[in-house]
Structure formats: structure tokens, C-alpha cells
Image (cartoon, rainbow, N blue to C red; front, side):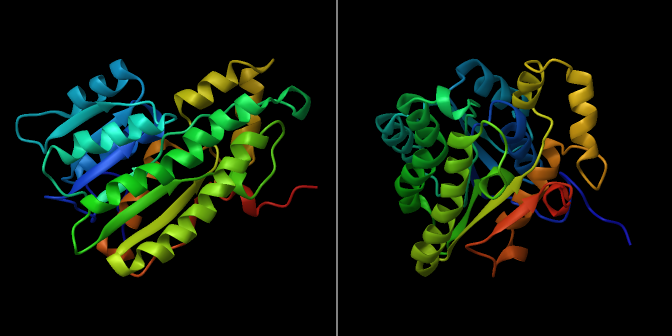
Length: 266
């Protein structure tokens, strides 16, 4: 028996519309590329104008589903309202919303400020709430799927990660409550908790440590499956949770971490 993995697998989204935030690079771009390869019409969102336009251009082919790029700083509630209006002006319904956009600022407690904490929470937690609120009216009567990108930080403590961890834990609570509130509209809401994933954000963090090569080796060894994750590992999980095969799955979260959090540390 063979396992299907990544784009081209059994989940297909032909004729469906998917909104993906934080789509310029890393996990968000991988999710977008995977959904597009499975037939979805994409609405990509990122504050990085050059990056999100480049991502859209790379996917736009003559025989492929349409891709639209939107530039928005989701930390700004007015930008979310304008984004929703722009999406509404396209005249299409939304079938899938992936709340992926996030930032991580690692600081010890003594160095934290209210401004830093508030910015992380605004992008990682408030934005998924406000964007969901703004886009739910655009879902069809038959419902759809919302997938929130949380993190293993939501349930596991790491050094200097208070704002990020709090935002990701809050996102799990938001997921459960949205799932309950939107169930009567047949909109399923779930979350994914990735572990260490090789992304530009990871590469940027790695450059800040004294011995990047040793750190890379050590973090890979933490995983029982023997490696850090790849963006496509998360994209495959999004495809499942967005598909009809997950039609009776809502209000929960899927840990995608190569077994990292099942290992006992002592």
C-alpha cells in the first residue's frame, strides 16, 4: 500500500476558493502551492507586497486556476476590513480560509514590553478572529473549512517565547469556540500545531545562535522521525482538514511535529 503525500494526492479542490494569509513564503506559500496544485482558486494575503505578488506570479499559468494577491498588514483592523471588501468585490464565495500569518519575537521576561506583546497578539491571534469574522459571510450555505496555524508552543514551553506561546495557545481556544459558533453554518474550524519546520523564519533564527550547524543537528535529533519538518508536511495536513474526508472533524487540533512532543525529556 502506497501513501499519497503532498500535491497531487487524493484531496482535490477544483472549483473551490481558498484564502491563505502569510502566503509570501515558508509554510503559507507551501500551503498555497499545494491547494493550487489540487485545483483551488487562490486569494493570497501578505504584508510583503513583493513576496506575495511573486508567489502569485509563480503559480499563474494559462491552464491553472486563478490566483489573486492582496497586500495587507493584518495587525491593522482597518486593513482587514479593506481586505474583506476587496475579496467581496471579486464576487466569489470562499470555501477555505487558512489563517497562517504570524510573527515570532523571542525575548526573556525582563526584556518584554507591552508593545511587543500586543503586536504579537494582534497578528497571531486578533487577526485570525477579525478576518474570520469578516469573511464568514462569504462562505456558501453548504459551509466550508477554516484552518488556523497554531504551534507546539501552545502546549510546550520553550525559552524566551512568552508572547508567541500565549498567542498560539489563544488560537487553540479561538479554534474551539469558532467551531462551536459556526457549526450551524456547516463551517468546520480546526487548527494545526507544527513543530520545528524548515522555513525562512527558522533560517533567520538559526543565524542568531553561536553554532548554527550544531543547533540544526541537535534540533533534528529531537524528533523521533529523525528530521525537522518541511512546509509540505504542514500543507498536506491543511489539505486533509479542508477536505470532505474531514467532514466530521471540527474544533480540534492536529499536531504535526515528527513526534517531538511525545518524547520524554529529563
